[in-house]
Structures are given as structure tokens and as C-alpha cells.
Image (cartoon, rainbow, N blue to C red; front, side):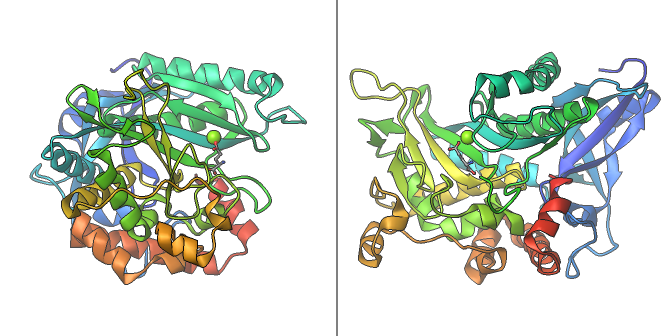
Length: 432
Ligand code: GLU
Ligand code: MG
């Protein structure tokens, strides 16, 4: 991995969805890759606008270690005479090398292992929408060739960088909103999907910077703009068989899992969308999924079932379930771990299949909503931070990680209260 003029950056995505870490010069790269680097526990909770949560439980105490995974790296080329950077993603471990209870990447590994114990594995592919500022293109025509051509130089640079590290993208395209674009990843196991997400987003931000542009994944750039979503497509597998969908609906294997996502939606959502800005995106009629429901090919549902080219026998080897209520402020490891934990809770409870909601759920009457188990999702961050959500996070991730995570969310809510929507969006747009 080492080559002249390189730095090595060891990082871990924190509880505010921000990759943080430290770098060493080339002479120390080998040692740092082998042994890792020390890190401060409280750094996991540094806010998006900086500062530590007032009730952050770590304080000034303790020391942990970032231990890199050589399989999760990308090399960002040098720019304007500066060195290239190798970026390596890490587990945050205790000083003796054992697992640290607050590491999101470790929490995802534990959730994957518990899912495997039920005989199921999961494949994940993600779509990320984002805004590119500074393009010399006066008029973004949604999904047009001209917008595709305008973004192609950035897309090519990003894909070249990623491909050198073995990461392929499925699409890089113009989206609907003003200067809005989208990438989609190819399906992989959840840990690789999370690692590739972090590496891909950092590569896009870096490539844009190098080209005099700015890429922002902020969920809601402006109140009158469409949002930038993260859509998590997942499929459940029994060995080599995709058991997600049969005859255009969930199977006996996937239905309890998906029912768990609906049953625990109010606990899941604060782990898949983080910031106060995120909640402005969760509105009806914006193709986001502002209600707890599943719908076949329904983009107003929190969960869309996507059968994709079913075979003659009704099986759907390429089917996925799309969880739409995520954005790029999320820690993607915790978001995927929370999905798996909620799904496992559904399996454990033997939850019955949710109904197929084929309408815009905002048009349902109160009686219809009750009959279909459709509930509106929280419309603001402070409304989402309920005792039940904290209790579920504690069950899923243990008390230390849950407490640290919720201290971050309360900190977000406090900081947001001092800002107008636009002032907060302007600041967060530079972070995410
Ligand atoms: N921009 C929408 C969102 O915020 C999604 C639109 C789409 O279906 O691609 O999630
Ligand atoms: Mg899209």
C-alpha cells in the first residue's frame, strides 16, 4: 500500500456519521497498519457542529485503539502538490485488542453473526443522493443527458479511484432535484456494504474538492427542495437462495423480519436518520416514506418491496426490500445493525406479515391507518428521542453505546434549537 509521498489516515465513522481519525506519514505506515493508533473515547461523540455533548459519558477519561482492516481501504490521489492519502477503516478496540462496546463497526459484526445464527444472511446495496455545488451548468434538467454529461468528469474520477481499490459502483447518474445526483452500489455482505459506503462518500467529497466542486449529502438542502436520501436495499438469503420475495410479496422467511422493522419503526428511525435536518426530509409526497408501512413498488412507503424480474415459477432471485428512511448523516454501521436487530426482533416474536399498502399512506383515514398498522413517523428530532427508542437501542447495542448515541442526538437537538432551518442547513452542508 505504501508509495512515495503518501500519508495514511486511520478512521472510524463516529456516532454523528462523520469519519474521524488521524494520519501518519509514510515512514510510519507499516507500523500503523499492523498495530493501529490510539484514540480518545469521547471523540466518538464530537458533534457535527463540533463540541461534545454536555452529558457525554466518556468525559476526559480513557483510551482506545483504532485497528485498521486492510480489506477496507482506498487511495486518494495527491492534489496540487499535496501527498496522496491511503484511507483505512478501523475497528475501535480496547487497548488490549479486545472488542470495545461502543464501536459501531463491531456492533454491525455482532448483528450479522446473530442473523447468521437464524440460518439467514443478508445482502445490501445502497443508493445515495447528493448535491453538487459549483457545477458550471445553469439548468439541471432532471435525469437528462446534459446533467449526466455535466457530472461525468466527477463520476469518472470517483469510479477510477474506487475501482483501483476493488470497489465498483452500479450507477452514477443525474437525479431529480437541483444539481442532485445519485450513486448506487452493487450488493454485498452488510459489513462490506458499510465499509464501501464510507470509502465511496469520502472519495466523492474528495474528488469534488480536487475539481473545485463541493459534494454534499445533506438530507434536506432547502425546505422547497427534494431531499437527499439513502435507500438501503437488502435481500435475505438461505444459502444461495434469495428468500425475500415470492409472487410479488414477502415470503414466510422475510415477512417476520420486515414486520419487525414496522413494529420497531419508531426505535429504528433515530438510528437511520440522525440530524434535526434529517427530519425535514421525512414528509409525505416527497417519495421518502413518512409512514410505517410496506408497499409493493410503493415509493411513499417506509419500505418498498422490489421484486425485479420474477422468474416463471414466481420466485424473485434479484428481489430486494428497500428501506427508504435513511440518510447520509447516519452512521451506516449502526443503521444496518439496527435494521438487522429490528428484523431479528420480528423473527423472535413471529410477527405476522404486514399488509401491502398500495396507496399514498397520507391519504388514508384514521380508521384505515389503524387497520393497516400505518403510523406517521416522528416529524422532528426531539419527538423521535423517546424512552422506548432508547430502551430498544439499549437492548440492541448495550447500555454504553446506546447512552453515548442518545447523548449525541440530544446534543444535535440542543444545537439545532439555536438555528433557523436555513442557518443549520448551511453549516451542516459543509459537514455532510
Ligand atoms: N429524493 C427522495 C428521498 O429523499 C427519493 C427519490 C427517489 O425515489 O429516488 O429519499
Ligand atoms: Mg433516487
